[in-house]
Image (cartoon, rainbow, N blue to C red):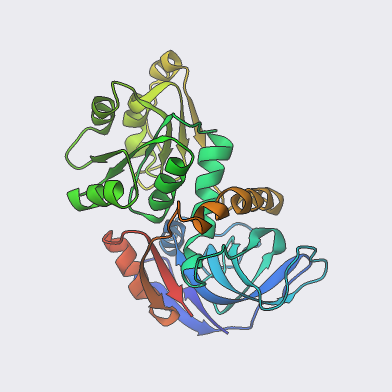
Length: 327
């Protein structure tokens, strides 16, 4: 089969397509003929040498795919058949024509979503639902601040939080993306972080109230402002480190707000935890896709052989929604 490898840490030019043996599904695993794979920031960080795969995971990048079931390893108990259209959450291996994945991380494609577009869903849906709902316990009527409005995480988080009855605020880096966040994605408040202080702007547009929950992909660069933006008893959930890993924390301000900071990563979690998350996504998120309350947003597709071009497009920051590699 063909698969993408990282020849050495660096830019998009380090991605190369190789002919390699097809994977053999182990105990409890499903073999999938991949139709499309989602591109995520974790793949970019892995390409740069900053985010190696967890022990035992494939060196091939790619954390989510859509495709058709091609076979089974021993002991698969989930109700799948060969040929079923599915999506899968991976620890790696998605940029390839086939992938073997634990059955608990596989879901049938939601009704009404085409098989290519479905590749945009598993990683972001699992990340957003597990952090906003399962971890932060976002409640209807609460205010949530979502950074990175028009990326894969942001586009899903805005729509999911709205569907759950939250007041949704978000940040973006241009007037065009601010407009997209409000007009297309349904954000109540959209803040241009390049021109505004987002804690101040949030309170000004939200009746003086801060955020009950913040979903943050930036990390250290936003730590001080995020704590400032929190409401009393607020929950800051850090899921990315685009702006660095080390920052200075004002514990006094955190104490005065009785607030908490939580940091999570999905990729290194054990299969049992990922299975619980994927089951919850199937039960809670898939119906929202089927009835149209959440719409997958795909910015652009590239053939597998153009993985480098796909990464260059991602690095440009021009995309709105997910970038997919199509087999």
